[in-house]
Image (cartoon, rainbow, N blue to C red; front, side, top):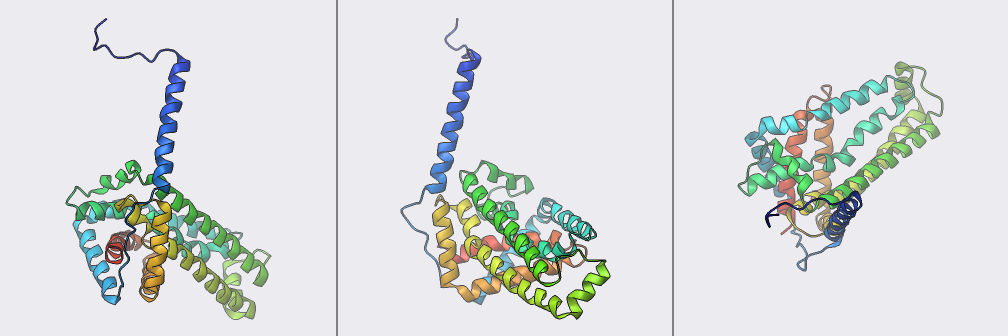
Length: 288
């Protein structure tokens, strides 16, 4: 037999053993990437309002450069919004419709991961079409990105459970008789206004928790091999050092998401790419 002949798999037992060994090696690499921290801790800059306007302008430039690609990439988000609205016609789900829509701001940083990658590649002079967004799946940081996304998803689920409890303690626990009756109870009764005020304050607390850990975490993980703990710690430091700028950034993101949701969520096709690209540039202004 020629020396260049390909190796055979052997028997099924040896093939399974080789597969397990390969999977174990891949898992070990993923765990190392999650835990690994570079010796040079990312340095956080002091920011001002000019950084927000710069991030928006640079994000708009990225959006214009790959408009059709970015819009195609986020086309599913308006469909998700419409599905939530349709589910709201079921009276059992109606009290959770607004919390679900507001909760998009919690998971939004994870939903825009492909847009961060497009901006990163465009900045580096690499191809940045919509297909390049999926290169995140091959990134060494993908396991860390996935874990952080799971955290935001868990935060969203807890928020929905808390919102259900707030409704139950104010206007509930009975299912609304109709959409009109529910709207009347919300806006014309003291219990309804209590639900609005408490729900808004609690929802803001959840949004703050999501913002604090993710404001630069996802872009940082794509940009440098810092590990998940360092990425989250850097994000928290950005929030502590630039609290007012970060809160205004979060409020701007929330306001634009609401604005994009008004015309049957169609505006999200434009708003989500703009915010995704702008978030990358916000990170670049925040971290040295």
